[in-house]
Length: 254
Image: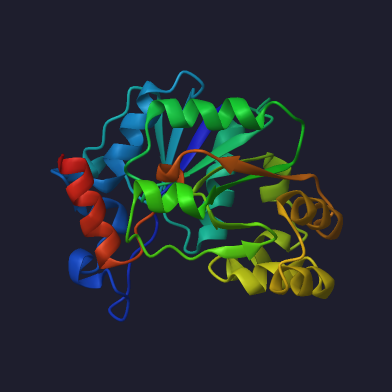
């Protein structure tokens, strides 16, 4: 499977990470002696299930390294446009590609084992979209004090993962769904409202579990969605705030 690494995010002056990036890409901020994205590339380099790697938002001048064939796609603006551009590049390299692995550049503690687990687990079924979630106790055991945002469901609290699998048609479709998902991806209640007010109420009152949410999302979105309960906190441990950056700097320095 080919992997897309999203690296187009540039913190603005009013955002928490701006003092660390000063107008440069977040993917290039130093983490334990190397650019943050390089840690993700190292994991992809060692993954047996990954063939090509496409980096979105950077270019060859940054001196990044990967053991897999590497291609670059310029920044197209927002997350949606970047992923669409990356997926188009995947289809140019491999027109027969049935799925794409989308990896964020800001999850530097992932390993090759976690990448292969994600690909293998997702391909056990034939769904259109796979979304990793990490249970709260798993996250807090591995990264105490990480300040993640959790969605409360029946019997479980989860946060979203930043390494997921999707079929190319979902990304390249002109139906408008993908743009709505991007607009709501940081807000759990907005995400719920996309799949119906009834689902929103169920989540608010904790009456739906992971399977129930999966079923209703699939019905409302018009595709086969699968929620994957991930055992690896690292896949959900992204860097949005200074304390998260410092936490991962210390973790990887060890």
